Structures are given as structure tokens and as C-alpha cells.
Image 1 (cartoon, helix red, strand yellow):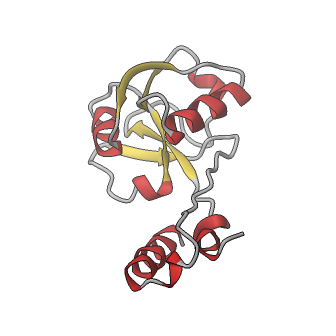
Image 2: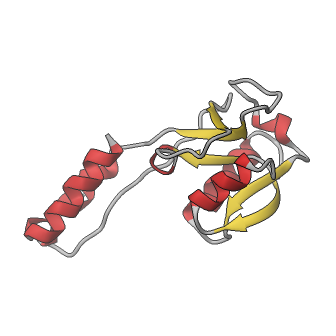
Length: 139
């Protein structure tokens, strides 16, 4: 494995279910219990959208996506407004809007975060700073 990949290859930030604070479910929440409920998700063809599709499929359901958005801040504000629920990676859930709480899914959902750079790129100071910052954030 190239050295640049090693920085984050072992990290698997936890994924939580973001729900409005008055949501009747209290963790851990089986993803199958969300079948038919409004789901908020990143736009298709992104790794987080695929993560949500796979997690729900493993639980035997297909999320009914009512609002795709590219930004987790937008998705979390939609959760706060009561528009639905979403799965959110730990790195994207650092700043929650008011009226949103995070509950664990009954089936653990993780994702792998890694970086790629050209051979020797991780020895360049600017790249090293970014890799170190990403590693610190993932920890």
C-alpha cells in the first residue's frame, strides 16, 4: 500500500442516523424500520449515497429518498425541519443544527476513508499537512 494511502486506510468513522429531536424512535434503530419513511440523502453517484443504499439494502429495505442534496449541512437542516432522516458519517456530523439528534443504527454502518497521491507525494510539505489534518479529523 502506498504510504499516502496508509494515513487514513485504517479509519472507519462511525455512521449515525440523524433524526429530528422529537422523532419517536430511540436508538439503536433497525434500518428496516425506516422502510417507507422519508429519507434524505446525498446526490446519486457519491460514496455516501452508495453507503446509504447498501446499508438499507442489507437491512432489507430501499430508502425512499425525498430530497437529494450535495451538502450534509443542507441534509441536517432538512432533518431539523422534519423533512426526513438520513445516515450521516461522523466527520459530517460535527456541527449539528438545533433540533437534530444522532442515534446509532442497529446494524453498524461504517465507511472507509483513504487518500491517494502520486508516488512520493506524501513527502511534500503541503500534501503532508493535508494528510495529517485528515488523519487527526478521522481520529
